[in-house]
Image (cartoon, rainbow, N blue to C red):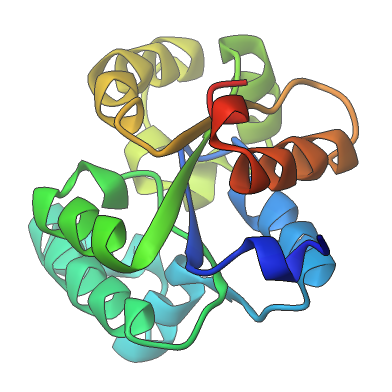
Length: 181
């Protein structure tokens, strides 16, 4: 069975910022021959401003409301690979929509991996801009991991190249017994 034939629904990547949703999502989409969509980029395009600016000018709640609407619209598209923002899956309405039309995949990463990846981009990430990075990421992990665990598939991203992660996602999509790798 080829990779595309195994996937009958939109694949929705969830997880903390820095887990690799965008880079892994692009590779996964290429392997599946499906379009790749980054929800954060779509939100910025719809708002006409960066996520940092949305947070600064309108607040987190306004961002989350817009995020929910954009993701709902994206989920109406034909099958694709969708990388969501780190907080999108926390919204019960968004999770419910994903469960109807998609397969959710939690890209789980260790704290050291996340901190290393996020050190370079923290100034562009409103939830990480102030305070100790490791403490803030730990706090987000504690808050979000129980909700991310509701995903259909859980994949550990690790420190190495992304191709083994893509392989693990494809294997889990084909065989649900491999969904909790």
